[in-house]
Amino acid sequence: MRLDDVVITKAIVENFCKKFLEYSEMDVAIAGAGPAGLCTAYYLAKAKVKVAIFERKLSIGGGMWGGGMMFNELVIGEEGKRILDEIEVSYKSYQKGYYTADAVECISTLCSKTVKAGAKVFNLMSVEDVMLEDENICGLVLNWSAVELAGLHVDPLTIRAKYLVEATGHPAELVKIIVKKIGPKLFTSTGDIVGEKPMWADRGEKEVVENSKEVFPHVYVVGMAANAVYGSYRMGPIFGGMLLSGEKVAKEIIAKLKKQR
Image 1 (cartoon, rainbow, N blue to C red):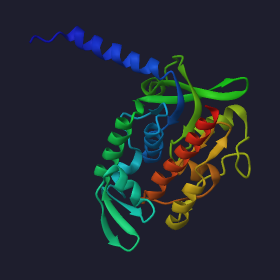
Image 2: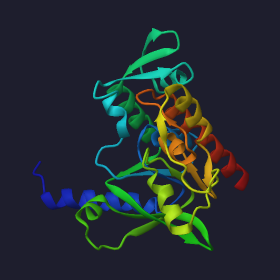
Image 3: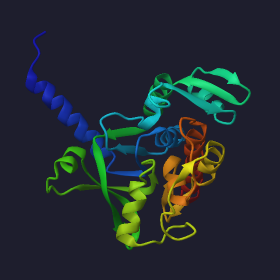
């Protein structure tokens, strides 16, 4: 069969546009496709929630690919390993309470399971702003990452969602936009972003789950963004808390959506 270059182009453009238009309105939009954002999307999609992730970079998976300092091995604690069991990632017991997993297997499997569960991932898209209706946050303002990197003046497009999830990691970029544009009105002790504290794995692992919650009406934080916003510790290449934080927020949003229906 002779291949036609224009047919290839049409297939890509038509199907992408169809996919993007389908997700111009959804239940949950997630900013950031690291492990916490992916895990949130995985559990939402499993519950038949319409969810999409918008990731600035070409690759998805955040910092999990590199394990610790480019040794592509990571550690999972006792509480988090049940999620590895669920998504069928193999791991080894190192000593009591510490389990190691191959970083590439772990994040690639999570990416695959999330997409197969029904979540849509749009990479190379940056969150530029939030959208308001009647003073309520109701969506994201998006642009191509290449436009942002090139410093071009190109107007963005918007998508509507009932809930937003901040999963951009340490920078907490979505919440920073909210504070800059709306003011320090967060559900934190100061109303502002408190800021990330130094490394303390034991505290950071526990508190990342505690801090993964609603931070502004209809806006949730997960993963390292949660600790940065609420003022807790980083934990380095141990990832159980990141996965558990996504599961927690997904359950909270699912419960709210059920009440609304």
